[in-house]
Amino acid sequence: MYDVAVIGGGAAGLTFSVMAKRQNPKLNILILEKNARVGKKLAVTGNGRCNITNTDLSASHFHGDREFAQKLIDKFGFMDTVGFFGSIGVLIKKEENGKCYPYSLQASSVVDALRFECDRLGVITLCENAVTEIIENKGYYTVKGNGNYTAKTVVFAAGGMSGMSKYGTDGSAYKLLKKHGLINPKPAIVQIKTENTLTRPLKGIKVYATVKIGSHTDFGEVLFCDYGLSGPPVLQLSRYAENGSTLYLDLMPEYTQNDIEKMIAERASLDREPSEFFTGMLNKRVGQTLIKMFGQDSKKLAQAIKNLPFTLCGNTGFVNAQTTHGGFDTKMIKEDTSSKIYKGVYIIGEALNVDGDCGGYNLQLAFASANAAAKSVSGYLK
Image (cartoon, rainbow, N blue to C red; front, top):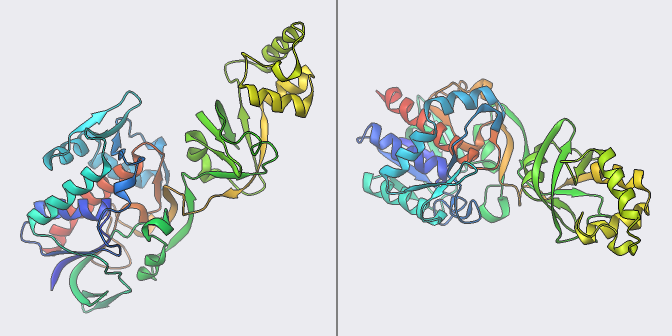
């Protein structure tokens, strides 16, 4: 019999296992991983660089149950993460925007360090071992995979649904905890599909713009694609995108619409060819496209530059999503991440109804929830 069966050998599962063994070296911990190796998704996160955390961990960067997230972060924050990874040999590099990476800039090195520490501490890992059922029996749990494994506690770290075709996180693990409330999972931090009359001819063009969906705004580099829009601010706001709603781009956020109308009127006196009208003011192809759509009407052009509309038609799906918005209802989960429904079961990481912005927030949440569970499990088993 194992003390703990960990479902999932990703960022949360590996971190929990290290932390729990450090809390109590006598714990007999088993990790059951569906994929051929642990940390498969972690190894490619952050474009292979692994954005581990962020210096700014304020609650505004989290979504879903923000209060629950803040309680976890308060107990395991930025310096705790830096210290933990330093203890397993991963030096953290800070960038000016607050994002933090391993000094090697290799996500694989983070996976290796966690794996090495699990091995050193005696954590047992079984890969290619998908869990199909968890059965409660007289205070213990039978976890069914390639075999039947009995454990006193279970830590659910199987993730959500993001990147499902690449990493096998298709959401099927949710059914393992059938009685637990599940808030509708949606793709988050994902490219947005739009009506593409404008985006297709501009495919590959990047502009800096303010993006607005409803009352939510963000600023940064926006990429036009044949299917719609991408880029950091688009990904950031994707959790708010609903089919049929409208996304607006402000291509010149530093200027008012009146300022832009005056600029256009002044440019008209330069007597340029229409194809060169916006040269020096906007990306050339963007300017040419606007001229084709609105002519040289200063009011219409200024309005389009400040509020260029795109009808939303969905997103590129879980296969391209970086995280999952939604998950197990945190109202049924205690602050130590233990389930109020299943005694001795803990839920950590992406499976929770909490998700963070792009920028290291989702990994920080994985580490903070792993910390809470690790501290609680040892006491529970006593």
